[in-house]
Length: 348
Ligand code: EPU
Image (tube, rainbow, N blue to C red; front, side, top):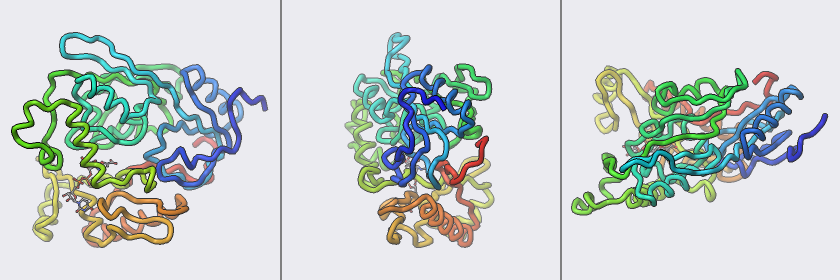
């Protein structure tokens, strides 16, 4: 086997997944450019290795060591294009830290992504689950992504409309492993309205302050609100919301609401979105912990690896929570993070 420069063997991934699960990669390399990415993937193909392209590792559960090649996407770079009047395109390398990119845009006075401050992970991972918070989703500003399509081996630009975005979902999530997102383009504006529809956020400001707010003020408010409820992965390893908020037919919501008048929910014309955190909280899981893993005591949607938890520990806790919510409310919770199974078979 001819080992390309800077591929390493048996590398710990503990610091590269925000749940802090102590697993390792059989082979590991960093893709700092498109060409470097291709050479890493070529090496894996020649050796018949499974590959995993890793971003910030903030939305993953490793169930075991990774027996193939982990390529960490480290393509950086930020630039402005088509700066015309109030609007501009912000181009981000897929390996850029998402939160720093938000602060960069907001500090320059551009609006559109300030509500997405403090979401962990990289820019390239943001479209995969169409990150969203406080009434804003990535799809609201995304123009296009540049990807390496591993089915064809070619580079492509995929426009927002083709990404098939939905709540925490996209074509990238539905075809895992097919696309590597190396660059994104966001349409931002200095005069777009700020989105303060969420009570948590609006309540942070005085009514009179609102007309003069800058996107940086909003980003800072979002950071304060998130820090109140969500644990810092550096101190309490976690993967953000562990479950999606379930979407149920309107009739189910009406029945549930009749039975549980306090239940929060967001009904639309045909379906309603329920608050998974509330369902979990009602089942008594908030603040639960065993020796290794637990449920955050301020946001029941966040599972925490307190001390040496394995992927199996986290997944079995998630399964117990799912079963309780199903038994009590008849509602199925779907996991938000992806699971990297243990003992992958070739072709994964
Ligand atoms: N609630 C509880 N118990 C809890 C937490 C919340 O009963 O422990 C209730 C709240 O009172 C509220 C409802 O559940 O009525 C919803 O809670 P919250 O507003 O905190 O938001 P969420 O639906 O739990 C979602 C996103 C978060 C995002 C926030 C703010 C999902 C899966 N989660 O959480 O995203 O930051 O809204 O927009 O959509 C993430 O994806 O990692 C994430 C943190």
